[in-house]
Amino acid sequence: MDVLYAAEMQICDRLTAEQYQLHSLDLMRWAASAVADFARAQFPLARRVTVVCGRGNNGGDGMLAARMLASAGLEVTTLLMGLPDGLKGDAAAAWAELTTQKSGAASNRVHILASAEDLPRYAGNLALDSDLIVDAVLGTGFKPPLRGLALAALDWIDASRLPVLAVDLPSGWEADETGAAARGPHYPADAVITFIAPKPAHVFGHLTRRWNQPVVLKPFNSREPVAVAASGAASPRLRWAGSSLALAQSPRAANANKGNFGHVLVVGGSVGKSGAPAMTSLAALRSGAGLVTAAIPAPVLPMVASVAPELMTWPLAASPGGCIASENLASESLSALMAGKSVLAIGPGLGQSPETVKFTLGLLSATKIPAVIDADALNILAAGPELAAGLAKITKDGRTMVLTPHPGEMARMAGVTIAEVQANRLEVARGFAQKAGVTLVLKGARTLIAHPNGRVAVNTSGNPGMAKGGSGDLLTGLIAGLLAQHPSEAALAVEAAVYLHGLAADLAVRAGDEHTLLATDSLHHLAQAFRSQAFDFRACGPSRYLWLQGLPPEIEPFAAIHEALP
Picture 1 (cartoon, rainbow, N blue to C red):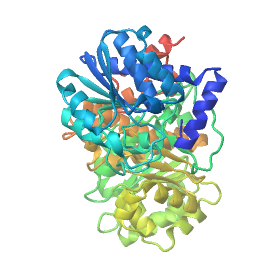
Picture 2: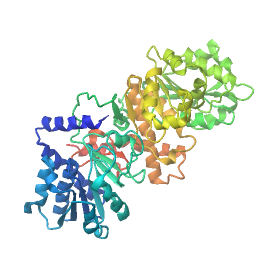
Picture 3: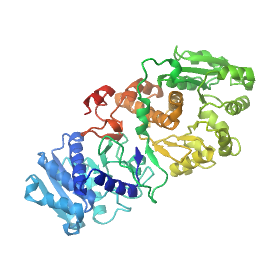
Picture 4: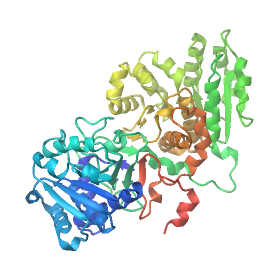
């Protein structure tokens, strides 16, 4: 699923209405219905609702949602921010529907706030009379900063301490924001609902008060959004990583055998660092790879071999310090090691001894299969001159090379500071991937998957409990395992692996706690993540929402959802 910038979203709305022969007001009614339904589902105990509306189309969505909530029997108070004579187009039509007697419901009180001086009179006591605030003040067309009456109302909403459902975006957030935080004052949110396609702020921004609160998308139908013509306002394409999950869920043929699903070679480990390659190998096995072999220095091989009886091992000659020795590059040894392997995962627990550096660089140069490079292997590459140019030579024949740096490793690779990486994550990841010809997985909150062609996928699964040792080792194994199974769709395989990694951890935290989560805990929930269809765009029926952030109350299994589809 593409992530659309504000200018593209305007085109998409128009094309959607044209394709389905809808009046734009009908599209507004559809969005308002989604808001009202989600408000009732997400906040079932809320019987008294205050809907705060601006004078644009976002406010129109709120006005019609207020009417629908009142018709459903809730006590609704609607506040219009500004005089109604400033309303135009569909927003004016929505106001007319709200304020006519045909709109229903004596339980829908309407107040007009002409200026900030009206706030104490109309809004001051609503905190005592409401269970939920719906923020429909500003939407996709907003440009910061927040000002005027909208800014004056911020203090009141903050002071109310009520839960807030934001329509499209929390007011004060710019749709095209690609940072984690808004550039200026903004309304709080405990849930966000948007429509048709996500905007950058929905996948990059921390829009809600807590990391696990919902940001959901209401798709117009069960297909991808209407194609949008290229816009001069848009940079190269952004995608939501979760839409690649369908690749991992493709059914297997009844006559499949282990040879159909690839053979992953994990190279890593050293004395004192046996756990890292063990976790990488276990994750590759759990991802569905047909075979996994761990090539480990002989002194630590027994510890890695004990992780799972399904894991094959290969003893590598070790240096006196217990690291991989360069003598393993001998042609006969290397040929035997690489025979039948389809994907290489190198780096976890590797160490950076001179012998290991020589072996790592030699192995990458001597092999042609797809490679996932992590941890110490990244640091070894970063220590060399002109890293990007050197990688471009390795990948010039179309070899798939996946690098998985955290911000510190990315800073060393790019020759910048960690602060510069974090301030410009999208630009740094995209620029390095294009220059080096690699797929770059820049880890962190909202992990980015940047491809050599300039496309970047943004991952929205995962949680702070993953900020522990071993999490990156599991990710390396998942990426390698999915690459082994889907070699012709490498880009989607990497995106799906990143999304599954975070989703499994989210499921583990829901069953436990973010403080106590261990990296390997998420593996116990990987099967549930693989079978989840609540996140599959194609599985969204008339009453379904796509959860960009957070988890729905129940994640239904694959079969149950598809049986329910028309």
